[in-house]
Image (cartoon, rainbow, N blue to C red; front, side):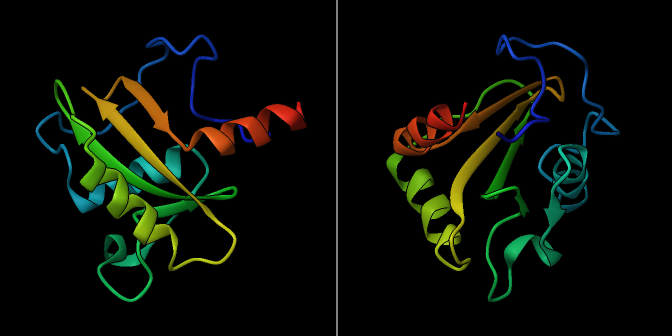
Length: 119
């Protein structure tokens, strides 16, 4: 089962450094976040033919970094899913980073069920 997203309780635990606190959402900070979980950044954050900010284990990861809050809409999730379609056999993941400390992973429920069966 994939590891590396932080505190298993789901609460903000160890701090994740994203550099300068005013760098939220930059290509550089997103690449740093992907690397911090052991993933591989995608050059230019998926602006080419291969979409997504990076890959990690079986996931195509789209990073959303903000200081205080982030709203997930159907449109946002649709983009994350569309980006994942440019990769073979990879599931979409939205990695929301709040204030550089709290990391939340959003995946489809069916993927969570599959991961739970591995345990």
